[in-house]
Image 1 (cartoon, rainbow, N blue to C red):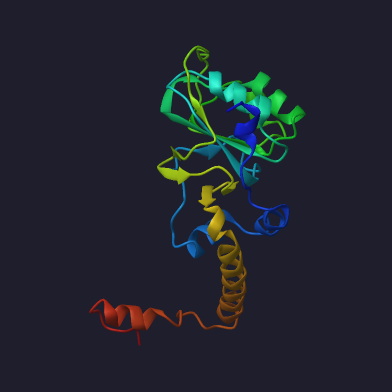
Image 2 (cartoon, one colour):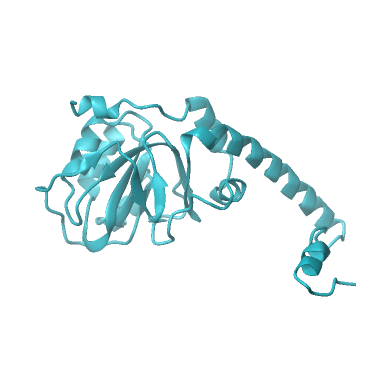
Length: 223
């Protein structure tokens, strides 16, 4: 198998990506069964950063970014490079140079379960970066890793081609086979929340489900 062949796998469609961009990560997480959200250690470098696209998965040994560089060389435009860096924070796996290359390749962003560096410039740039902390120390480039395989990033299973969406709240991963159902449910939830906001503005301050939930919990209902 060649490296180029490792970039060939089914991906979430462009049409689904465009639809997914309309929704907050919190909405998608709720309708996906409150599953798929990465550990909160993985955060955007700036509050305005967001990502939405197919996962290109990478597994590396702690502190080594050799296979991260290979992924940069072969990933397709729009891909989100998702790196299982073992939550290592003893050094950074990437910085300015790799982000510059990713921008030139028109990639969709980085989600890295490890540290980054060059924080001031990356945080003020346009390329979306989600990482698990920062560290000025650079990585090594000498250990084998793996590409386009199932990985665990931020405590969540990620497969090549899965939908990855990130915003200020964090990152959620939707399995490729579930994307269509989740997007349909997300639209329904948005409409339901808009209706509830109208009810609150009209003075209906007790949620319709609250008394039933209290009774099921063995608690008295509100008056």
